[in-house]
Length: 277
Image (cartoon, rainbow, N blue to C red; front, side, top):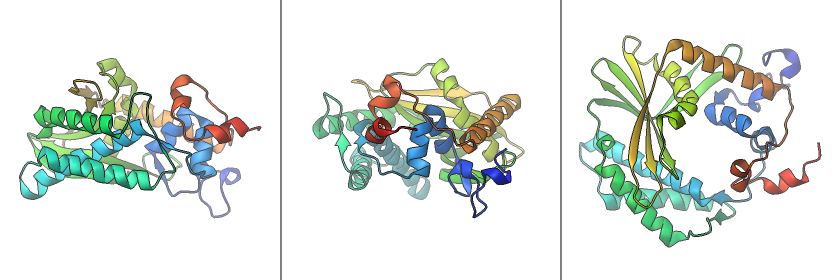
């Protein structure tokens, strides 16, 4: 197990979470995607060679939506499209300054990204999810809790938390190159299920509803909402999988998981090619 002495650093922090005092979904999902990428990112702490424009679009759209909800919460007014675009480009510039290189897709450049961002935000503003029917209690809400046996606290940063009657709603925003279906949402459910376990402490007498809100990066963007069943048995299974993932990390066995999807936008391709262990 990860808490045993042989899997601990000299400072007493678990080897399996890279010496950090918390576990995050990013750590778990990175290892599950590619164990060697986890090592490069969290243990060796290598500087990424580039950042993919697709990731920049996702984080910048996310920031614009965050700005929109904060504006609603703080002043009860709607952010304009121009204001949301300003938030998008503020985030874009910050991320670019942190990166060696921005790598665009074959048909992309800054101008095409600008047009895409505007289309996506127009679709968001026109959608039902741009407003909530309840009371917002958290935006980018940081929650921690001891939900994994023998591991440090789990950290979750939840995009939007609001109360709708007797229901606590947890919403996570995603951007995607193509439309999702319920199967796609279910295959991504583990993150929300972990967040549900954290969020139950906020209002323990409320039911929990989990939502993915997906805005597509298509020529005509759409906004889709998918609900995930927060069944307690399903949550417990997800926690067991997370626990096993931490055990696998603690074993110290790291290897490349090559695939067209994993490798095409991976910023550690050079150290991966040079890896010999």
